[in-house]
Image (cartoon, rainbow, N blue to C red; front, side, top):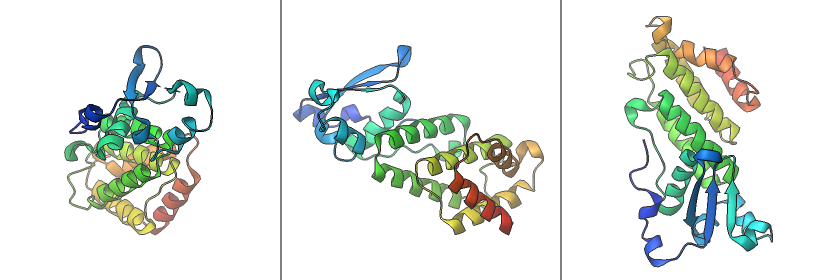
Length: 216
């Protein structure tokens, strides 16, 4: 579930020599890549600061990103070079695999402070939950409901949120849909269990969740 094109296929590499080195991750998972300041700098508050405020990175043209995984960073680079946002396949939107990647990408976007990409993922997730209705083939398992809860919570953690009315309608449909199935296939049950077990839950997420619950 990667983007259709990789950042390395950008024609920019053909006509311009990379001038910044990124060291992503740690240990066996560490990946080193060469990129362009002119591409990564403008959209990212983090890169812009690191390369222009006289820090060690400014002089060495080398940036260590120890807390970001390559899984997330690669998709950020794909967007920076090609403006292509990673999207999971429709039938796997809320699978465990897609959820792990969502978390990795959103963590990278938040750390690198890229407002436009945060907005892109907010729109994407609002679009996704709008497709969930009483007849939706999605979320027909407790696991998928839990995965959706994780992804939405990550969105709130990076400073974005779901429109209140959309949140309520989504929860209403999820509950109605889940009532047709036993617990093992009940997406609403999975959503509730995960939200109840969140460690250090985002306060805005809890506010919107409680508000939605009050109307169910």
